Length: 271
Image (cartoon, helix red, strand yellow):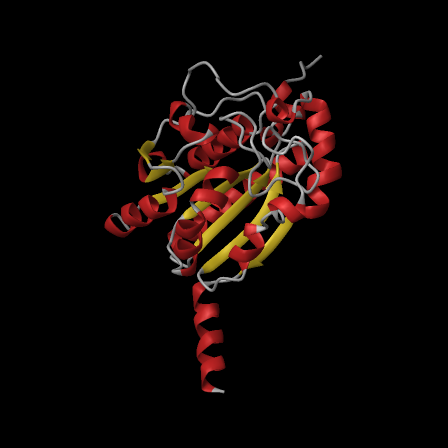
């Protein structure tokens, strides 16, 4: 009888326990159930599969994402809080052949870094922006973030986010999609194997866009923060599905090129 081998019955893309060579061998500091580790693994796999480990540069700002450089064996640069798009812009313009990506949370990208985010995309900087949205400030005590849901309890909104007092949650990805410099804008998640595959496909597409010089690729990953939300990882995924996905629906928001935007604006100005 011929022995049955694992590789004969399991597809390579489903071998989730395989470790990418881009990942470093260090202890994980993220909380149990955190989405950051999954996204790190996806980025590492994409870099390895594309063979660009020596050509990619990550920009880490402040927040839970600040220690991304511990886990991915690539070149990194540290940015001040919210300034990752500006640092990424400078590095990419000096080294146009490099793959440059910014990795930011919602408190970083959508609060103190809103100006840098919007203007970098509006200019169509040829960078990748990965945006982790868990609707809270995870590192500094669970305060309300720009993306915190209406009624969501945080350490600074103990009775829930109140529109009259705090305003509305910021759908910054929808704003990004309207900018002419945005080539690819998508919102994904990593809470199921199927969604992990979709997010990996989106990240790969974003890096491939970078090589085509067609503008900014922006990927939001709707994520959990069970420690900040004060619920367990399983309940966090359920809460995210029931509360965040209706307000932050998953899927592509824009897939075009900078040339498309230029053509549209020229035609509009001629009228």
